[in-house]
Image (cartoon, rainbow, N blue to C red):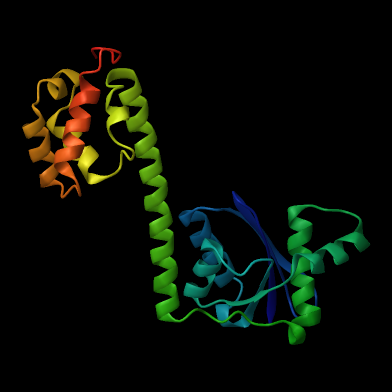
Length: 222
C-alpha cells in the first residue's frame, strides 16, 4: 500500500507519496486546472495502480475530489485539525510539509479513517445541476449589471419603467424601442400591444403609466 498526502489550495495542489515502510517515494505540485489534475492522476499511476494508493486530503468535495473519484482513487478525508496537531509538533508549516503529514496520517491511522463513498448517480446529477444554476445566476447578475450601466448612460428613463430588467416584458420593450426617442414616439395602444405579447398581468394600466413616465418634462431627452 502507498499513501498519498494531498494538500489542496485554490490555485495548486501538493502531493507527497510514502510507501508502506514510511519512506517518501515521490512528490509533485500540480496546478488546479484540468491539465494539472490530469497530470496528478498520471503521476499517481506512475507510482502504483490507483487502487493500491490511499489518498488522504483535508476536504471531501470539489473538482479535485471528483477527479480523483472518477479516476478510481480511494480517498480518506481528514479533519484539518488533525494535521494542525501533527504540524505543531514539527513547528513548521509549508504546503509540501502538510502533504507529507497527511501521507503519514494515512499510514499510521488508516484503520480509523472513513473512506469517502462516491455519490450516487442521482446525487451527482443534482450537484451538477446546482453548479449549473449557480453559474447561470452569476451570469445573469453580470449581464443585468452591464445592462443597467448602459441604460444609465444612454437610456436612463428606461430604468424608471420597470422594476426588474431581467423580466421578459422589460427585454421585449427594450428590443422594440431601443432608444428613448423610439419609446416616446409610441402610443399607449402600441405599448399595450407589446406588453400583451409578453403576457404582462396588467398591460393597459401599465402602458398608460409608462407613457406618462416617458413624457415627463423632467426626463432628459436621451
